[in-house]
Every structure is written in C-alpha cells, then in structure tokens.
Image 1 (cartoon, protein in one colour):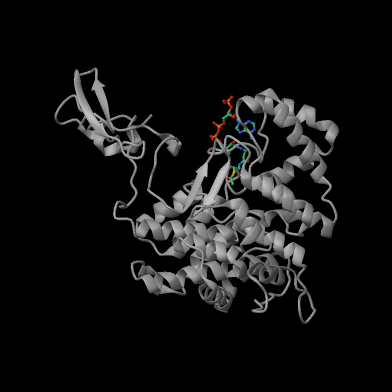
Image 2 (cartoon, helix red, strand yellow):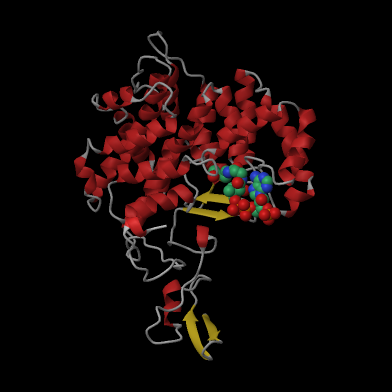
Length: 428
Ligand code: ACO
C-alpha cells in the first residue's frame, strides 16, 4: 500500500496501517495501538521535540544539512543583500514582497507607531539601575499590552494588524528607553526622519545634538543583522510564542513569553556568552588549551553547534562578511582575531567535524554589536527586536490554521500512585 506505514505490535501480533503525508505520520493515529481496550493507546516520547512537527508552516524553510535558509521561499542571502528589515518583516507577515505603495504605507505605519504611551515610562523608571535589559524588555512588553485591552480580539484581522504594527514599531523604543534608563541618560524620543535601524541608533546614542547623525555603514549593518534574525521557524522562542498564543492570549503577553525563552544562554543569550568566552581565552596562544577543555566536556564552544544546522549556518557567513564593513568604520574589534583563529582550529578538529559543529549566527554577531557600542547585556535585545516579526507571523499563521488547538503535550507518569495522606505529626 503506497503512502502508508504498516506497524506490527509484537505484544499483540496485530498490525496497523498508518497514513503517511509529507514523510510524516500523525501522532494521534498511533492511539489505536493498544493491548487492552481500555488502554490509553500508544504515544511517542520526544523530549525537546527532536523529531516532532508541531505545525504546518509556509513562512521559513531551513535545510540544516545543506545550510539553506529562506523566508517565504526567498534565500536569506538575497534578502540580506537587497531588502531592508522592514520590508522583510512585511514579507514574513504577508507571504509576499510588498509592491511600491504597500511598502511606502508599511514603512509609514511602522514609523508612526514608535512612540510609547508616556505612562509606560513610569514602569521603565521603576527598574533598578542594573536590571538586565532582557528582564526589562520582557516586563515592558507584557505591560505594553495593558495599554491596548482591545488586543485580546485576536480573531479580528484589523485589530490584530494594529497590534502587529505597534509591537514591531515600539520594540525599538522599549529597548532603547530601557538602555538609557540603565545608564542614567534622558530618554531620546523616536525621530520619524530615520529608517527603522537608524531610529533605533538615534534613540540609543543621541546626546545633546539637535539632530543625531547616523553612520550609513552602521545603519546598513544593523539592518542586515535584523534581517538575519527575523525568523527561524520552530525554534525554542517561536514555539513558546505558538504555545502561549494557542491559549488565545493577547500578542503582547505571547511576545513577552517568547522573549523570555529567547533570554536563555542556549538560545538568544549565546552571543553574549561568545564575547565572555573570547575574553576569557584572551589571546590566540590560549586557543589550543581552550579547545582541549571543551573536548574534555568542560564547557562548550559558544556560538558553535545548532539543533538544525549540521553545516555552516548561512547567517554566520553573512554576518562575518558584514563585520568587515563595520570594522572599516569603527576599527577592528580586537576579539576578531581570536574568533577567526578559534573558528579555523575548531573546523579542522575531529571532535567538531565528527559532530558537525559549525559557527552559528551568534558566533560573530556579538563582535558587530560591540563595535556598534552596544553593551553586552543588550545583545539578546538586539536579537529580540527583529525576531518579533517572525514571532508575530508564526502567531498569525497559528491563529488561522484550522488544525491547531490549545497546545497540551502528554507525559509518561513515573511517580507513585494512590498513596495515603499522612498528617504532619506522623511524618518521619
Ligand atoms: N561545543 C562543544 N560541544 C558541543 C557544542 C559546542 N558548542 N554543541 C554541541 N556539542 C556536542 C555535544 O556535547 C554532543 O556531544 P556528544 O555526542 O559527545 O554528547 C554533540 O555535540 C551533540 O550536541 P547536542 O547537545 O546533542 O546538540 P543539540 O542540538 O541538543 O544542541 C545547541 C544545540 C544547544 C545549540 C548546542 O550546540 C549548544 O549548546 N551550542 C552552544 C550554544 C550556542 O551557541 N547556542 C546558540 C544556538 S543558535 C540560536 O539559538 C540563535
């Protein structure tokens, strides 16, 4: 029988035919496999979702073995070279590139929504001076939603679109305001004359000058970084966005949750960890000893390895190239030589070759952020800013997908059963 999988249960001798679609079987089709009629039925055990498709998606394509990444079918290399982040966000959300008018309108919309409600500043002011920028971002994003109670109308397309625009537009203001608050600088308000990345740099770094001057080279490099980070299909934070969204929470709460998932050092926190690692290595002569430690299981080579890419992460290649453009303006980051040598040694080492460990997007991005004068604590915020467009595109796809319901995995219970309650005075 074509396009089916025949499963024989050796416990009972029964066979089952299960339909195959897109090289995949439906997990619920396994439930018919039982020993006794009142059994729950067979499940799959897949901690960390190593081999489970949680959705059908037409947003981002990755071939991890070949090192291919496409947004809506367009290779990331072409977008990095020819598009802007704002246009790419439109592509992710709408499934096609905008025509000229659509692009002008979209740019206008995003630019016009960057201002935060002044009352939100009281919340930003309340953080301690040394609060981590990601803690600030997560909380401020959740709080932003309280200004828009209408956002809970997630099935109203117009209302949904308003929140999407607000989140993409305001996240640069949230990131920059929280940074300024942390260093005791007055807030710099959005300036509609700038592009999206230019406006972010303006709000971060404007001093007393009446008009901030953006370096076109740095603005362009930042735009490329934003494009590269905009989406990456069902990673940890995007899955979090979908799981929270599946309960029909408002998008601000879902984005705050997704940002919390991104905060972890194994995900968006890795670029910060790379700089710590390069500083700790300190000089090229210490690299062999460092590599030996990693191979002995004492720590990881941060910025290397990926759940999906078993080849060079295409984003790392583009970032490495962009870094040179930035260093021409800012001067070379002294950690670059260590990074290049570390990469060279690791790519020739059998341990890394055998495990298919290559540089990922985070290996070089931190070096550019540092050159842009962005402090390390802000690195994950730099990742979260563009990733909101991916999260929102995935969230919208989820809401419109008739196959989806509230997310609710199963478990294999391994604890005791039917114990008696013991009053506290009788417990050992
Ligand atoms: N350094 C050294 N060894 C590594 C590394 C690394 N960076 N990454 C994986 N390995 C080893 C593992 O120890 C394991 O070895 P073993 O088979 O001898 O036990 C093998 O390679 C397979 O690794 P897993 O941990 O099974 O791979 P997984 O897919 O679970 O992890 C991850 C992927 C989390 C990205 C991992 O490679 C890692 O921790 N890398 C460093 C952190 C990092 O750079 N994260 C950024 C990821 S990209 C992003 O989120 C934007």
